[in-house]
Length: 198
Image (cartoon, rainbow, N blue to C red; front, side):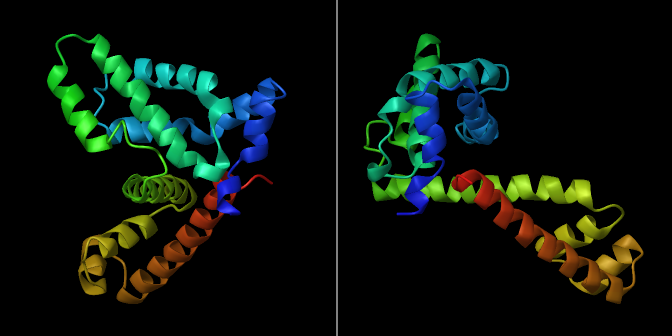
């Protein structure tokens, strides 16, 4: 139940109290997630900013209808993103094939509480959080630490990484552990920031 309270006081302030600050904060929390999902939905790059604007417009109109008892906010938001995307594509007369494909992939008419959609949202959310965390890690570490960590994720062993980076094997192990620990802490902080109101 705690997870269903995701940013709920922020949503309440933005909708019922009409606080501009709360609306802006909500957008700052979720704008990158919106773009992430639009990329997952294969929206053309030339269209993505226009579609994102449509999402934000639809979000402003529908936000008051969000019911935390029916599911997590990000699940509901994913449905809003999908609906806004389909609406945009429908206006592009020559893209009927993309409409059908998107509708099939995203189950547009399925209630947002359905378990299969929930599982997909959870997967997309975890990927988004991890991607965001890695961006922050790259800004924190200089040199070859992140390279060594990512090579390890790609399946290379410590000896191979040492050879490719010019590091000692011991340094490879040390740096990978440091980055792994930092990534864990960064993910935990992002989850706290994005999933719970402080």
